[in-house]
Length: 415
Image (cartoon, rainbow, N blue to C red):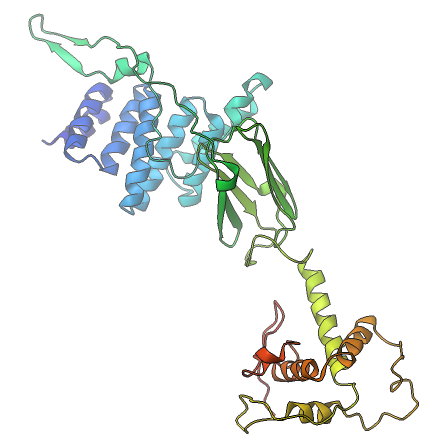
C-alpha cells in the first residue's frame, strides 16, 4: 500500500500523527500534489497544529491554481478558512470562507463554519478588535508561511517506537527556530503603481505598495470617490484619491484589505452590468453628461444650419463615391435659408433670442475662419451630426465617421 493510501487510512481512524507521517512521505515523492497537501492540512488541523494546517492549505491553494483544479481550490480554501478561525484570525477566516461560498455555496460544512465565524465576531470585545482585521487576499502570497511555536512542533514530530521496551513514545518538543515575520521595506511613493479590472458586480482596484502599516491605513468610500492614505517611512503621508469615479458605487458593500505587498479594494457597482471605461469620469454623472451631449448636438445643428452663405472656395478631397466635393459650396447650399427676410431678428447678428448654447455655437461658427467653417461643416455633415471639428487639416484627410454619444447606437434608416 502506498504512503497516500496509508495516510488516508490513518486519517479515517483518527490516527492523526501517523496520517501526517504518511502524507509527508507521499509529498516527498509528489511535492506539488494539492490533494496530499489538503489531506495533511486536515490531519494537522485535527491534531490542533493550526499554523502547520494553514501553511499546507496556503500551498494547496497555490498548487491547485497552477493545476487549474477548481474542486481542489475550493477544498484548499475551506481548509485555509478553518485554520485561520482556529488561529483566532476571525476577520481573515470570514473573508476566505466567503471566497469558498462564492465558488461553491453548497460545499459540505461551509455554512456551519460561516455561522460559527459570524457568531464569534459578534461577541468580540473592544480589546479584541485586532481579531476582526482582514489581512489576507484570495490568493496566498508565495512563501507566506506562518511561524509555528514549540507546542506545534511537538505535535508534528514523528512517533518513535521504543524497540527495547515495546512501547510507543512521542518525540519531545523542540524550540522554535522561526524568526518573527518582518514587515517588507516600504515602497517609495514615486514607485507606487495601481491596476484594476472589473466584472458585472465589482471593480477590483489594487494599489501596489509594500510595507503599508495596516493599523494606520485610512481607506474611505463615498458614492463617487475613493480615498487611500497612510504614513510613509519618510515621515510624510501618501494620499491617493479617485474622484469622481466613473459611476456610482455602494460604499456599504465595498471591501478593503491591507496586505504586506499591496492594498486590495473591491468597489461594489451601484448599477450591476455597467461597464467602466476608466476609473474616473470627466463628468459628475452620466445623466448630466448625456443631457449636455444632447443639448450641444441640437445647438450645433441649429448654429451650423442657420448661418448666412459663404464665399466659394476650392475643391478638397473626400471619401464620397461621387467624387471630390467643394465643401465651401456644400456649406453655402446647406446654410442658405430661403425663408429668411432682410431686417428680421433671424438675420440680425446681434439677435440674442432662443437657447444660450444655440447662440454660443452661432457666434462660434460666424466668427471662425473659412477653413474652420469648412471643417465644422464637413465633420458635422459626414458624421450625421455626432461630431464637430475645427481642424481642417485633419478633417480633409477622409470621411468623418459617425460617433454616437455613450449609451446610443448609430443605425442606418431605409429611405
